Every structure is written in C-alpha cells, then in structure tokens.
Length: 632
Image (cartoon, rainbow, N blue to C red; front, side, top):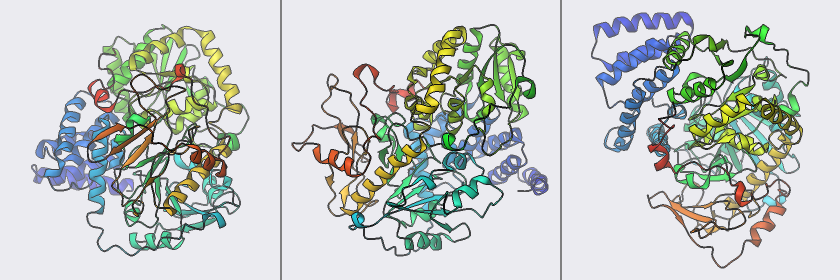
C-alpha cells in the first residue's frame, strides 16, 4: 500500500487490461490500485468497465456507485441503484459474491430492506468457508448477582480514529465494583497516540487488555471465549479492521453491535444493536435481523465534557483562508455522504440569502470541480462555495473546532453526520438535519433530542430547505439557538458520558440476565414502561432462536387512533410487523427490575402527544419518495 507499490500495480494492471480487454477481474484489480493511488476518477472508470463486462457483479456495482458519489458524479447513480437493488432481490439464484464490502452500504442510498439484504449476503459469504468450528464453553450466568459482570469490547480503533475519539473515556468510567471490562484489541500497540494510552491504561481505560490482531480467527475466538465474557460489544461492525469471522465462531453467548457501524449487520451471530428510540424508530425494526437495545435518551457516545480544552478556539477565518464577510453554511462530510439531491437542498438554502456562502471541505479535486459545475447549472456563482482542506488533529481539542466559525451547519440527508455532529453541537453551532429512514440518517436527530433542540429536526428535504432559509434570514433565531446549545453543553445529556456509561451498564446487565434465564429477547427501551415482559424461549440460547422479536414503541400518554398497544412482535419469515394486545399480566415486574439495575434516573420522560419524535415513512414508502426528487 505504499505510493510506489501502488504506482507499480497501476502500471502492470493497465498493461493487463490492454492485453485482456474483456477480463472483468483485471479491471476490478485496476480499480483497487487506482483507489490506493488516490485516483478516484480512474477507479470509477475501471469499475464502470467491470459492470459493463459483468452486469451481475454486485460488488463492482456497489463500489462503482460509491466511487461516483466520491467524485460527485451523479448522472448515472440512479440507474445503477435500480440495477443493484434488482441484483440483491435475485442474489439467492447466483453464487455468493466475493469482495463484498458491507461498509459501502452505509454510503449508498439503498432502500433500507435492500441494505439489509446487502449485509446479509456479505455475512453469508463471510462464513461460507469458516471450516471446522471449535467448541466454545459459555460461562455460567446464573450467579450474576454474586459476581461482577464480565463485559468485553472488541475494536481496532482504540487510537487516533473517529471511533477512538468518541470512546476515549468510556472504558475507564465503568463501575469496577459491578463490571470487569476487558478490551480485545485487533490492532498493534500505538504508544504515540494519546487516545491509545488513555484507553489501554489500567486506571483510565480497560481493566484487562488482550491483543488479538495477530491471531488466526479460531485462536482469537478461543481467547475471547476463555475470558468468560458475559456480553461482548463489537465497536467495529463492518468497518475497516473488523473481525466478523471471529464473532461468527460464537465466542460469547451475547454479542452486540455498537457505534462502528450504524445499521443492521445482517449476520446471525450478532444478537443486538445498541440504538435508541429516535435513531431506530419501532416501525423500522423489520430492517434489522438483530434485536434492538435502546439506550436513553441517545445511543451516541462522546468524551467532550471530560477531554475538551476549555480555551477558545484558535481558528479564525483568516487562518483558514475564508472570506472575512458573509454568512457561512458549513458541511465537512466526505462527498460519499451526499448526493445531488442533498446538494440541491443546500443550494436552495444558500439561494435564500445573497451574502450566504457554502463552506465545504475538499477531499479530491474532481469532487470540487463537479460540485462547482452542478452549482453553476443551478445558477449559483462559484465564488459562493468556499473550500478548505481537512484540518489537523490535535488531542484534547475538538477535531472540528473550526466549525465555530460557521453560522449554520447543514447535515447531509441520506447518510448523516455522526461523530462530527458532537463536535458541531459542542461548539454551539446550530445543526439542521432531516430524520431519514435509517439509523445513519437519524443519529443527529437523536443527538438533538438529547440536547432538547428538536426544533432543528426536519421531517423531509423540503422542510429542511424551509427551515434552513428561516435560519439564514433571521439572526435572532440563530442567536437564540446558540445560547440554548451553549447551556445544553453543560446541562444536556448528550455530553454526560458518565450517565451514558451507567445506561450501558444497566442494559448490559439486563442482557446477561436474559441469557442466564434462557428468556426470549426483546427490546430494552430505557423508557418508563421499562423492560417488556420476557417471552418463553423454549430452552434455546442466544443466536439460535427463530428470530422472533417483541418491539416496544413509545406511544406517549395515550394510544393513537387505531393502535392497540406498545407491544409488537415480528418474525423474519416475512410476516412483517404485527401489533398484538397486551397480555393479562402487568408491567410491574419490569419496572422493579429497572430499579435493581441502578438505571433509575437514566430514563427519559415519556414525550407528550404533541412532542412525538419525528418518524420517517415506513421503508416501502421511503424508497418510493427517496430524498425528495423534486427538491430543487
């Protein structure tokens, strides 16, 4: 992966494609070489040739869409999306694909059920050649009341990385009287990173440290299993450095996906997704094959209140080369996170005030050229789009502290800002978002609810434009929002990392207790209703059930017209989501369990009927009206 080796690979593969112009594998490898050598346009062209030669190649088509988004070349993206979803619908009739990267699915505006199918296909391919599975001995969990809960975390990002930035203080905040925390590191030591030193120090980080980065899958699985972990939280998901093959060997009886991948893993070896009732509204439960564990009020983690330097931001417009005058509307996301329709929404907001400027980060020159050209077609002068390079990372500071120079931060629509959003809110910059149709596009809405600033959440792209236009025109509204966000920095629950860790502990203990009693899994919401009544499991262990679920929905103080109850069950067999009446027994048992878990005070108040969370259209409707095609 060195620059010289990438150049040599490009030279040889270009020769290979000239000698074998009808060989899709040669062009696929050429695209990968172009990608490593920072030639995104060349990668896009090579992948287009692969798809031309083999129209059924799911991996190549997904990579092509991602490459097009990365250079803001959107003309042919819709037709490739249609083809990709058609291929996913008939994937069971063809051999399992190779080189399928589920992480790409986060950036491709697929229908939510198509995204689930994409990940399920990748999971099947992943375990298709696991071979002989070693025998795993699960720890006895019937003595949880007499010992500490063994909680494990698995990550490759305990370093200077977006995930490491957010979770830096989390491991050390666990109550060691109740929990023993073991960190399984799928990475080598990185003593130069202050984040690594914090997370691996026995006092400020995990109590135990196990390096598995150089272990084979079966050896790593045995290492996790021998640690007698009750609940294992995977912080990678499908992101780079994941060890899903290790998790597929089932080293732990309860395996949970959290933070590194905002969506369904599509893998039967993942039992739960840690989320919240805003990020994953109950009607979206069918998008997941996992069970949902809700954390109140937001599943988002950060370490800002414990690590950020309180000194004023050193950034100025002059130091970044920004114009000295003009209202700044910012977005710092990579271009794969926004589409033509998202940019159109930003440009409409920009158009509502003559002196407003759109501030973007330049990730590659092709992105900048195509963005400016698209804006020109919409009648926007190129001088109204200002560009800066990605800023350097300094430990103990806000990675995106320069966002304090922005007047309004405009979120991406189909794939929202995630960890960067905490930086924006920490700097008290108004952040406007849309509650989309998946967790990755609803995380910002979850954060805003935790800060009691839900007035910044739009339900559609058209509402986003209208609200954005109001913000750029009305200075007093922006000032009031900044004041509110400044107060919420100290009082809001988003930056209460200690309280967040207590919520995680209450949920983890509950999951371990359910596994110990062989109870059917269901949603743990953290809302006043508490834990839904357990359903008889018929003796099966986690990961071996028929995937029948009970989904708890927060209905407010009264049932809406035509609704029966807040309990819903659905089965993966295709029956969909079925609402069923409550059974005769009451919920008092679940409420008592909440108090025993120490989660009292960690729960959110039930919203009033007129303050119900924004709920996107169900998956089928969201796909038909995806991203508000007529927004311009």
